[in-house]
Length: 427
Ligand code: ATP
Image 1 (cartoon, rainbow, N blue to C red):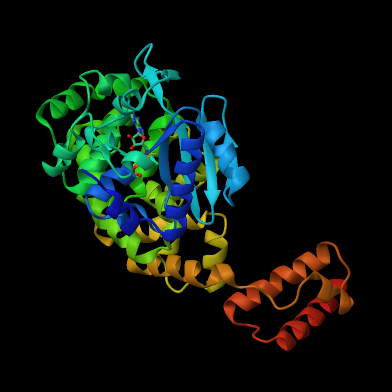
Image 2: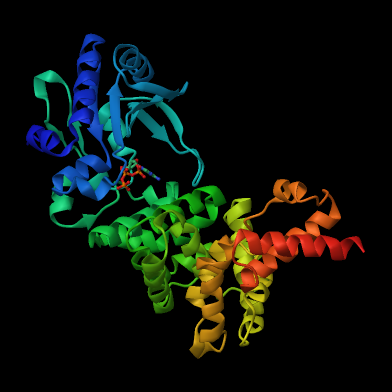
């Protein structure tokens, strides 16, 4: 099967030119280059937009020396060599596009969960080390068979039968992150597990214990970047994968409803963090520490997650009306915005955790109060004759409070208040 037409149709022109340039340079070096991985799968599915968005990252495998090839391409084109490594991989950047070039390699696993030992190999070696048959296809970029599909492990057949299939029985035990990856693809494409794959996946769930927190977290992050991550989360719950990662993790319908709400509210950049804060919403504060340690969570996200639970216990304080805007501000300013957002979404009247009043207060803080700034700053107060120091701090604080509560509106109002305050404070 030849996919030259699909490549030309789907790859952005600029990227296509670079790919063809790489192929020419490779020929000069006597090397062969292939397009591999997700992009081949998505080209065959007829929808590479599945992987586009603003980025269009391509994976290339080189039978030869990927670093040498990347260096040569960077010298003779406008592509920039971002990084290269001793173990035969290189990254090229060209406009908005990133290309990962890897020397074809063979992998062997010394023990389950460990990172594999790597030696140079052929394209076929490189493809067999991959996770599922649908990800083992390659497209030749060499001039004599440009566009030809290389499919030694029947990926195309599985794609047509809508199956997720591992390549050998030890696949999940060698690397149990593939359990999470399997579910991610199953839910993204609406595919099914091939029979033996399903059995082995269930059998090898305990092997997740052999995987480091960083690697589990990375796969969970990939899931949370999916369009509808709740599908995979629910499925991981059904399969018993979530409790294996952390005893209290669940993937019930509650999550689906809240994720959906989050998507409609939030700017996409913060979404994965917000999802994490929602996933843990039913945790106790004690359990959360085990979870954060298990996933080796970053300091920033750990803070957001802890804040989510801390704020949850304080929601009754926000459930009184009337509260002045400044009171709401002082109650909430110490929390990460994403934790506040999580509470606004997760708190549910029925569960008695919060009421509409508290939710309204949370929203008011998020949409308005946290952005309120005084027109005057320290420099301008100095010009009004107020000297730097505790006195100025106090004036700024009172101005801010007045601005929050509507006591001052204009710059002139602020100047008037600042001067009268400074007179009072001097006395
Ligand atoms: P998508 O982004 O759509 O998931 P992709 O191919 O870009 O597809 P990546 O996570 O970037 O996915 O991985 C690149 C390729 O590396 C995959 O196609 C897969 O074959 C391989 N791969 C990634 N993780 C593993 C793993 N744990 N075991 C084996 N192969 C893997």
